[in-house]
Length: 350
Image (cartoon, rainbow, N blue to C red; front, top):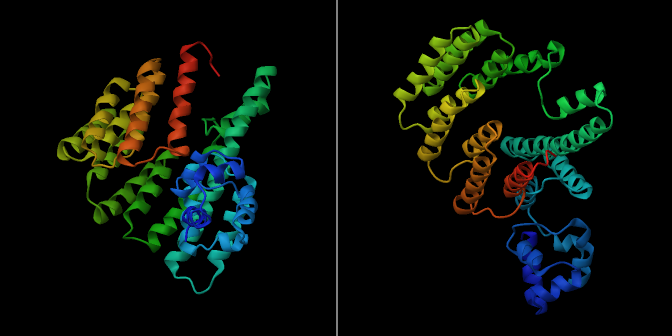
């Protein structure tokens, strides 16, 4: 039984309302409601009080299957901007033990390691947010602080003209071996080609594209042909490929999304927006939010903050209506962007 359902069951057995339980624990009744509807989880520090109130042990409170705990951890990673130290330790310990159990199937072990990697990436992302804030504070005191600038660029995944820092040879070597071992997994070729193109290893990228074409002949062939042409300096040929990609796949939302993102990368913003909107129209529901975010970024670059805010509002509406998501980091992030843009409109650049 999952924790929210367990709390609801115990509360009903005890004959108390959500308001009474909330008052006893020092939280709002809305918080209790979210627990019971499994929209959020109680803070780990509240677990002893909850168990004492209901007269059970914490272990009894957590009568959760391994599958439920995996789901709980995934929801934590989706819903929480920053994990508490206790939540991180709990997730890390559980997943580490989960992957070591010899009786697990390969798919189960793979899922455990996937969640572990997401857990570490989640912490890295929240740490990078803190690093960005601290670097900016440092620079507000001493503008010439080179190390602070380097920290800011690194934490923001910014550009830096340093080949040792930027090249991807290690990741490329991994995916070269990966595609040899998994020749029919078409996405592997895309990860490989993306990194080859970032390093301008264009001849190798063409070789991998030929292998990809045999496994997955689709709109992505023209997408990558165009990218290779563009990096070779053949701009006209590149745009011919991208236009052909859309013309041959008029109902494929990803084709329009790809061309729109290509336009955006080349700062051809006025051409990018219609393609990104077309992708939003064509995509089946429930839709992803990526293209709304891309349009918002473009409007912010153009200085049109009102339009950028509108796109983030569209994103929040999509999450509510198509994914039934109203709480957690997934919606808090666009809300923060809206507030940040409103401050910029008022003249506050922070």
